[in-house]
Length: 195
Image 1 (cartoon, rainbow, N blue to C red):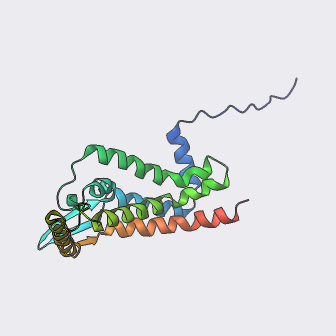
Image 2: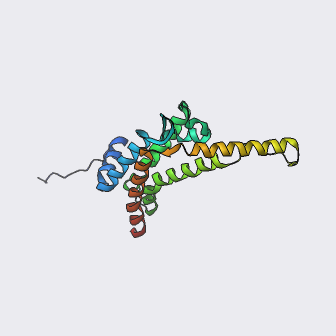
């Protein structure tokens, strides 16, 4: 009789199982960095507004609503569409470092840069949104309405400078930034040395 042959059955593991397996293959510092980014983005305040004894925090997954309307820094962000959509963007960026475990291409190591890239893009967009002109001046700059609009822009920017003194980066912002930088280092190293 012939010896029994071993037959390998293809694994039909569910997607969550493949993600868990890919996460298990990460090195310890990358795992810790991803956990820090998760806590920084979803459970801790990224920006904190302090007005006297009152404090209001904004989490990172609400950042798209704040970018769309910076006055939401001072009020509760109650926009389910922004939260859902940007929350999915955040989750995609968090899962991007797992790409090299699914796709065996050199470019997949760039996924380690995704969380840091998202933080930087949001910071630039929020800065540009809050530092630009709020009212557009008419083509005739010497008109009364043009003077009024210039006055209004100057007034808003002066008020914005006062407000900026009361807005600070929260613990979640620092934790997510440090975690994303730590996550970037092995991705860049492996991208450069991968053939």
